[in-house]
Picture 1 (cartoon, one colour):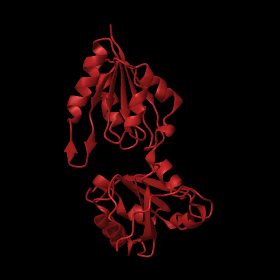
Picture 2: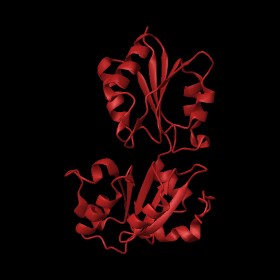
Picture 3: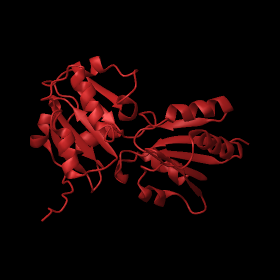
Picture 4: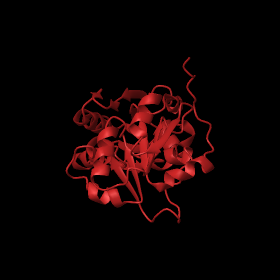
Length: 252
């Protein structure tokens, strides 16, 4: 008897943004394989007796290689179990979900994909930044910050002319991202927002321009996970911000 794997997007952080179907997949699972960015409160919906397996990845620190995670999913499904693979954000948005379902398909294991609320959409919204607006250009571009700082596959000339660019996981490469954008022709005065721990009660947002953002982030000392938004749309934040953010105590 072959089981099934549900590839579930956990949303950007706060548990309430998990979809209804995602919750049903958690409640009905025999095995839950979850990532580092998944809020652990979601595991409260896992039924007693089900197995929870941590498979988190943080930059430079992987608890399990991707091949091992694929093998775990396949093994449990082939044993007839219902497996929920819980991934932060949306599994197909820089989450390696495509690699995992490709492995399942090749192994002949049934699977379903349950999309989640992507951090690329939700985190700017919680920071008061709508990614689209008729007055601020017709396009939004999503880029991985890990590859974005160095990879030749990234068309920096196109990003320099894009209306709004959202970098996932770009905090550690922020200085190089800024340098690449400016070098490709983006104006140094372009507004930038860096949003850390978006949608959670620890959310912090630092704003500036390409010319000032690196120093501004360093002064605040914010850490990952963080999303970087570049574009004139960031200028709406001061008028549209609605979510109460964490404020670190002032240093004396």
